[in-house]
Length: 420
Image (cartoon, rainbow, N blue to C red; front, top):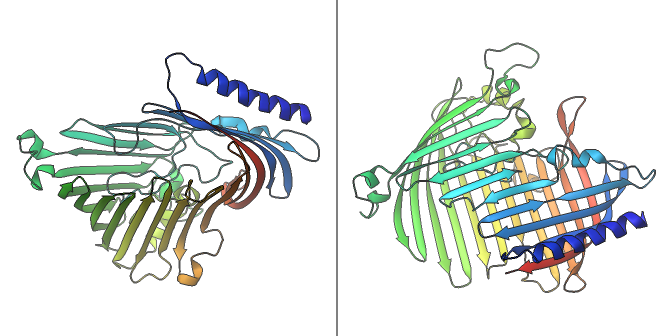
C-alpha cells in the first residue's frame, strides 16, 4: 500500500512538472491529488485520486481519476475506471460563446430558454458516468444548439436551430426588434422505455419526443444591465402541450454580478410537464411517461432563478419551480462555492430535490434528492484537509433501476495551481 501511495504522489509531481515545461504554452488551471478513505455501501476503500483541470485559451480538460483499494483484501475496484469514467470533460469555450463544444459528463445541460431541457445531467451517479456531447455554433444571423447524452448506448438527443430574421435585412442595429430571435427545438430519448406508459405491457409509444417554438427579444443592452423577454410554445408528442413566458435580467456592478430569471408556465392541455428533461431524468426516464400520462391538471406554475457572484470568488445559484395547483410539484436546485472569500476554508454545496410538497420537505434526503457537500481546510498553500459527503444514485445492474448511494470521503488533498 505504501508503494502505491508513493508511486501515485511521484506521478502527480512528474505530470505537473512535465506539463508546466511545455515550450510555447501558457496553461492555466490546477492539479488536485489526494489520499484518503471512502465508503460505498458497507465496503470501505483506500482512495487515491488525481483531478487535474487544464485550460489553454478556450480549450479545457477535466479528469477525475480515482483508484479504490478495498481495505479488507486490497483488491482494486477496476469498474470505477471503466467506460471512460476518469474523463469529466473536454471542452472548447463556454455555453453562450459563438463556438462551444463539450465532450464527457454533461453537468447541467440546457437548450434554448430551458422550458424543455434545463439542468439536465447525463450521469446521475459518479459510479455510472457517461460520455455525452454538447455542440453550439452561432454564425451571426443564425445558429444551432445541440446535445447527445451517451455515445456508448442510445440516449437523449436534442437540437435547437435558430435564426435572427432582421439581421438578413440589415436591421440588426434597430433597438429591440433588431435582436429578434426565433428558434425551434426537438428533443427525443431514443430508448424504447422512455415512452412507455404501462409497465409490463406493449405500447405504441416507443420513445418520448418533445418539440417547441421560441421567440425572444432583447429589451435593453447596456454594459451593466441587459434584459430579455421570451415566449415558448411546446408539445410533447402523443401527450399534451403548454407554453411559458419569461424575463431574463443580467446586472454587472462593481464586485457583483447578478442573473435573474422569472418565468410563468401554462399547460394548454392535460398530460403536459414543463422542463421534461431535468436533473433527475436519467434516473426516472423509464417511468416518467407513466406519470405524464396521469397528469389531468392544467395548472399554471412559476419558475425562478437567481445567480450571484461576489468579488469573483463567492458564487450562489438558486432555482425553484412549482405548479400552482399540484402540491408535490416543487423542484429545487441549489449550488454554492465560497472560493477564497473565507480565509483557509473552502465550502462547496450542490443540492437538487424534486416532487417537493412544502417547506418542511425541502431538505429531507430521500430518493428525490441529490447532494454534494464538501468542506476543506488549507493547512498551507498546497495542502488541504477535505471531507466530502455524496448522496447520489447507483445503477443496480440486476434490476436496471437506480438505488440511493451514500459516500463519505475524508482525504488529504494536494493542490498545485499553475500557469496564468
